[in-house]
Amino acid sequence: MQIRGSCFCGAIAYLVNGALHNARSCHCSMCRKAFSAQASAYAEIEPDTFEWVCGEEKLTSYESKNGGGLMFCSICGSTLCGTVEGQVHGVTLGCVDGDPGVSIGMHIYVGSKAPWEVMPDGVVAYEEGPSNDESKKA
Ligand SMILES: [Zn+2]
Ligand SMILES: [Zn+2]
Image (cartoon, rainbow, N blue to C red; front, side, top):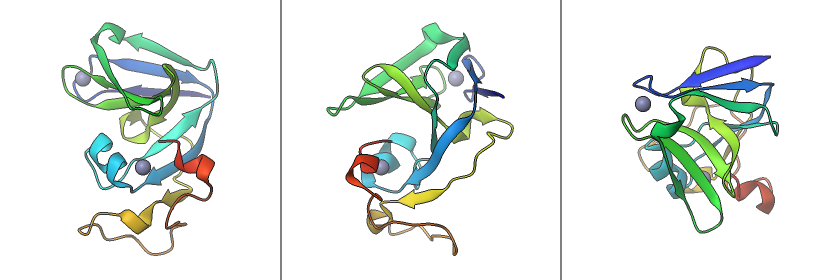
């Protein structure tokens, strides 16, 4: 399985040689800022399956105090991937081109969702993370 992704302006593209895992959406206040949206939409990659196809030199990044980070296009601002200690850990589903082969399996931190967000019925939702471990990830 190959998954491709790219930013809004098209300067940066990547390839994942494998499946995505653990697709989720986090509604916490940090993810809202990081993703400029009501929540994150993110899935993990398997180690060593990720490569940049073009535009890697146009990436910029931000790392938070816990070692988790995000990489985004310095031209258009699309957030392309998440990092843990500098290594690509997963991709933002919004920048995947086509079907990522996964669906969002859970919504976490809905207890702190934005007052303007209306949650759809029938989704798997947690007030916080399903475990503390989970809540540390994007
Ligand atoms: Zn771009
Ligand atoms: Zn979050």
